[in-house]
Image (cartoon, rainbow, N blue to C red; front, side, top):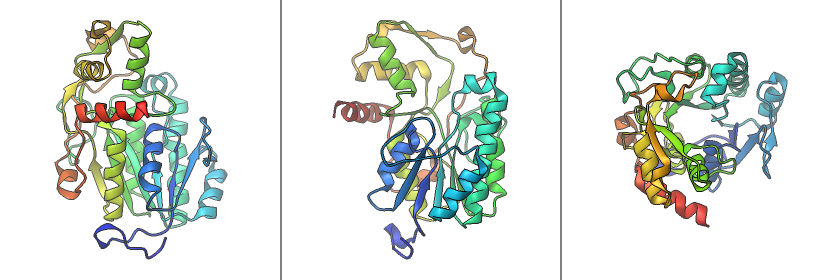
Length: 302
């Protein structure tokens, strides 16, 4: 859609490509964008109607798709996001999260596309969060180091770029992988769920995240933006909020320390993201935890 003027008279060139549309962020991005833009989406392991299969670790596949579509904007929410799996298999994590994304960056630069890369608060060490955009990253896990490595590649790219850091993303999704859906599923099965009370973050409702990102892209913004929910709370408090909204048995949700969980990957404990910068730029309000969970419940009931 070259030359079409969007909100606030900012032109967004060309079509849009979402790498990883079958995931939570990718699917919400597709929904947010499709009404106003020409959007193409890809999937890797979770087929969905209308999406193109793409293995982003195959350089030629990525290049061919990019040259065929010539998008104006390329969104990259695709990742190997399982922090434990990344710690257990750092080679695969690097292959997908660094090399694969690197091929997308290379191909996007080749057609002059703008890059919108989704990163995480795991680029920080969790010693003194929540974090602002200007604070120095210091990742402590394989996953966090991989995401930060790509952030640096993005910043060195020949393309215009926008890095979106977010965290604890939840919402309705086909694959059912996010924290809230997993909690609902396990508690309804009668399982006791141990939830860390010492991991503090800013839970982010996925559809709201994507509406904000859409506005940033339409405004032509570049650089690093933290886009997250406005509420700072620990994971156990978040679980209790979800239990209240979804009528779950709170007695099955047990607070523990991260150390008690015996996880292989180190977690940034005092984490979360400051959102003053994005709040000052966009008109879309950030969705708080209770509002997000209620909206999620309504969406799941449809």
